[in-house]
Length: 387
Ligand SMILES: [Zn+2]
Image (cartoon, rainbow, N blue to C red; front, side, top):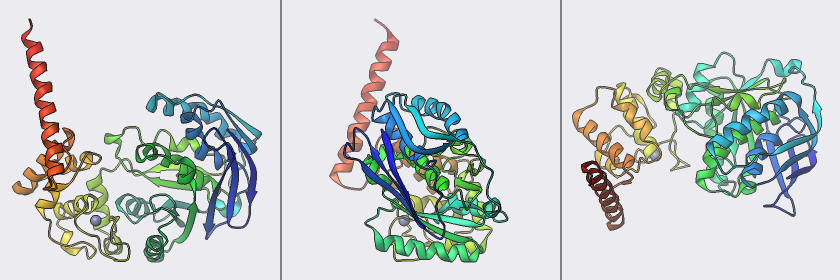
């Protein structure tokens, strides 16, 4: 993989990436409003390293200066990636220059930012670091696709309100990085951490630290793109990349948000209803957050959620990717009918049943999963009995 033709203007950086996937070259860009990007080649390293490893590239040649600190950390980052993705190869990284690391510029030294989506993790990180944070960063082209202009406009308006309420400045970033990756949902779970680090490194002329709110707590850690072992390794002398909030379980995060009236007024976890201030109250993220608030006795005070939890909706959820969060509720005194519903939804997810949508397809999938489990248990039992 070769990265050439670095360009930088007041509001954007780009470079051309030539690889086995893009033999003609792909113009990768990051564009900003509210901040000017830096002119070095650091940003491209976290954006390109993992795809280079996964695509079987032997070398990563960067025609721009890269921080010596960052270059020195790449073997450790590649160790971690290879332990998570055994098919990923080792890549030799060469930069035009291993740049000596400067400390943050005078203006940047006072500034730090956290990524912001409006959900539980980013609101927690904002409240926890409210005394030191100066900026929030909202990204278009990350969870929200570039084609979803109206959705992002609504998201940005809400983020501006939160930034104003907490006296922070909003930086909006826009990138075509997902088009560059062209990957599946599964791969994005590994790739997204490098993208956040890339955005942080783009902003090293105006920030000295960028915080990434943790998705999982320390007790729940598993391979995941933004991770406390990897995030800090993207740092340079000028910019620290910080994985923030992993010390707090989800209920602790919801508790901190629930104590903050401004945050409770603006809590928005839902991926649906982009033009509404309200969360839908029916999707997995909504129900998960509503239950957390209810356990704290604060659901009725949160204006962005309906105040009734529909147990039938919980039964229909597919918790395959989120059972860890739901398990946490079972450690709290939960109403017996809600507890039974959560227990059965978590058990179904962990056995691979998926949600019960009341359709013949979902019933067939659950029956098939049950048959497989009974068969596996039967075979294991017969083996134990011996010949
Ligand atoms: Zn929702």
